[in-house]
Length: 132
Length: 132
DNA sequence: GCACTTTTGACAATCATTCTCAATACGGTG
DNA sequence: CACCGTATTGAGAATGATTGTCAAAAGTGC
Image (cartoon, rainbow over all chains, first blue to last red; front, side):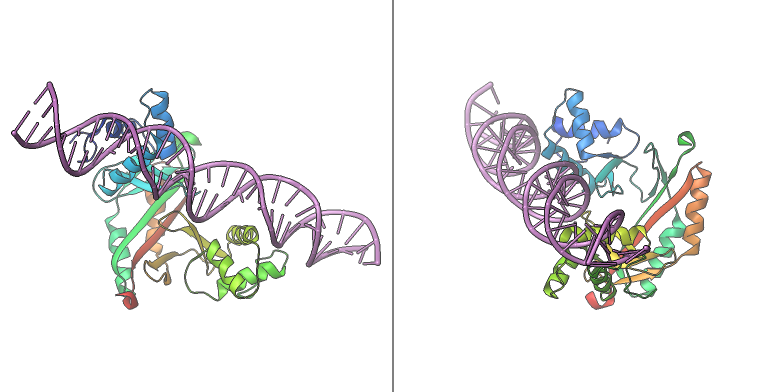
């Protein structure tokens, strides 16, 4: 698989366009932003299609989805291993980080309280060097 | 301060009602749910007021706000120290957990990458004993 | 009670996201 | 290549949470 494929889905030109837009950008973007970007580049893709494609890519684990502070869903291409994000709250620059210790800690805490099928979300926000 | 005060704001009956609704409930609730609850209890409070009150309480650190998986803002009364949540994805039961190790880890990682003014969000989801 | 500021509530307005459904594109098959 | 059945698309309507508006009502200090 390449970095711009469509995640095992039928590779229509719309899906390729969305995957490419994600591949071409560093940080997180909303569905709306991707839709606009594609429009500007002349590869217009319907808004509903952008939403559907992003959801499928996220389900397939091809991209990461998280919520911005105001609850908007934002997406970013990502590696396939489990990881978290360190995001610059000004420019959106993102660093993927891993923390085996955190993974272990969350599972342990959850089990201790009798919770099963544990998952978790962890995002770190800060201001990066260039934005200071 | 008591568990049902209004967080230093002018204590109108609407704010007291919202604070009380939060105090009376275990898990996270959306603004809509609180609005309905108050309506059923006969202490009807305008929806916009519920939203405004919750936002102010959250700003004042009187309640925790987080986003459910579908992006809805949900609120819960909380202790004032920094902590995270272990939430049952079926019944919404919530346990506050602390993890000094995680706090240290996030700061360290962020600094290592040159990020300042670091904050983070961490939520753990699972199925609690009673929902299995 | 009075003057002044804050808060409220009903409703309109936003905005992201989802739904609907007919038109279109795919992919495989003969 | 023509054809068929299914998956996908797009335009626009519908939904639903959240926010804005603004005149009326309530809290505060005097």
